[in-house]
View 1: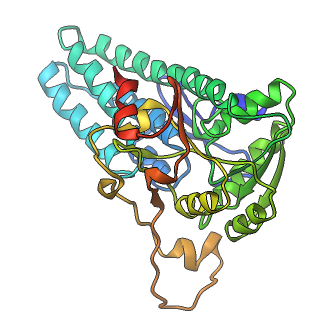
View 2: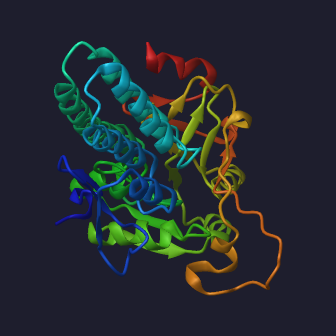
Length: 348
């Protein structure tokens, strides 16, 4: 089975089944999630990760939580539902898809307040399924638009993991690469390892190799050198939030790549579904940046690599200013500067 067809998030009505991405690439383990606490932990611990996949998991989470409620009247059911939604919203602050999916599920609940509670529970399940199906279509469309920017024989550089396991299917940044592969194009990829959790090394290389894509792993600090040597034709990354002015939050290290790409006259592309574009956030300065445990750096994968007591700064994301972004690839087309004006056209 090709990597792009592996489902990282599934729901059978009683439990959520997640591909545990912390076990990759050595083990392909699926978790059976039956409680909200288990799902919260899975999101926070990056067992499920990637902005679209987090949104899908959260949608299934509120459907699961709602299915377990015993309230029989709408008012009481709504209060408990809000508690479930707010709890899941607290798991990770930066990825806007989490809040987008929870908002879409809440709208479904409100729009169906005049039917029975059992019917509401089923409709919530159906809506979560629809979010997942929509994401697969969106990723395919992003891939189609992104493919127009590629030429046979190109070498791309990507950061973190924005592939099939981060979404319902295909991914965002990797979607054009998969479609190019399906069409017989020769596209090569450099994958940054992506510190501190090595999503590029553990996940991107794993899924690209499964799909038969020519991928070479490099450390984050090697990107400048491969660009200087003329080995990179374009950089393409995913993202966790795009502000209304086009500033983009993505995994820590992305901003540095954008600076390097501009220095070496290399196009820098961001692939994003509309659900990741936050028109309520004016600029990147307003995007909340998650800071994670110091032990992810001092004790990476359980092995101590730094002195006891050393001070650590561990932001999970950085913000790339819009003037470093060549284009944003969405399911509705490719957007270029001025982003403050052109992003609005996507929502008309």
